[in-house]
Amino acid sequence: MKNTETARDLLIALHATPALDRGAVCLLARDAERWTGRSPRAAGALAAELGLPRDQVRRALLAAADAPRLADRERERAEAHGGRLLTRLDPEYPEALGHLALQPP
Image (tube, rainbow, N blue to C red):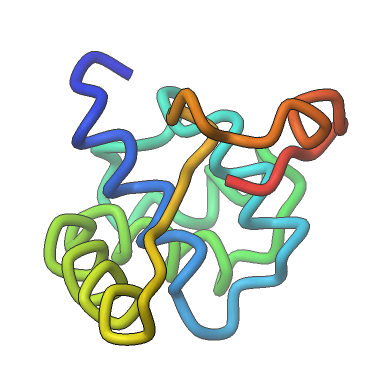
């Protein structure tokens, strides 16, 4: 993705979106450049293209549109518990996870 911070926000937002199957989150995160910016009305066609349920793709499109707010909320929650969030775009991302076919975002 062009802007690393925007991409990080998207990965965090996808992971934090309720009712998204974890496999779908990993797949959507891996192919985010292909689908971000599409309207939620395009969920049916995109779901068929990605081989995912339409309702999950629609939720992902909505999360992408609201990614900065969702990511900020998740960062605040992590910080409140003394943690911080890492994405596969961060240098500290565990190397062992990078070898998985569906990397956790």
